Amino acid sequence: MDPSFSIWAVRVFVRATNLEHPPGYRFFSPEILPGLGAGPFPLSGAQINELEGGLWYVNVTSAMLPGGQIRGQVLPLPVFTLQPQNQYVVACNSVTFNAIAIGTPTPTYQWQFNGANIAGATSSGYTKYNVQLSDAGNYTVVASNSAGSTTSATAVLSVYDSAAATLSSFAYDNDQFQFSITGVPGFSYVIQATTDFTSWTSIQTNTSPFTFTDTAVTNYPYRFYRAIH
Image 1: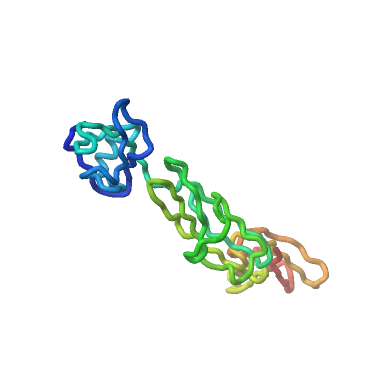
Image 2: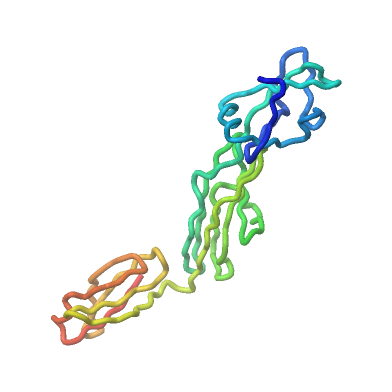
């Protein structure tokens, strides 16, 4: 590598400590090498393409290490291949967030709630048991290794006090009766109908929120509906 090689730009860091070095040379950490400083050292996109995929040597000239070489390695920041997703839960139940980050060395994890670390939440997945209304908010996870840290996308937890659905936006047109069902997002609801409040017939199952249309409404003098989870 060119002895005048410089290290510039953003978000990928070079580490030159605790690595093997040629026999006969004393190894020095970056913080005592003039011109390198303590690091980490950002790289341009072109330099990343040139250097990643293997080890490299930086030529160093100093009073402490004349004409020596230090072998280094490109260490990318952790990158998330699976981001945590928004979750919806009824109070007193459990909910799980999952994320996966890759990097070298293998990243560690720290989950956060509204920006504050969650004690003991240091795995790629985080489960919250007995969720309460006060647990609603923003959840993120920070993946870290010796190159640095990356914060995941924000996953919003919405907590409902019950799974009961709301029926609204009733309309009758062209011999059809239509209304909207809004419950816990992603929960499955069954539309049932009756004419006597004794015998209920299930007529459709769908995932909230959705719109239901009864095309057989003219077969009955009157009809009543409910949505159950």
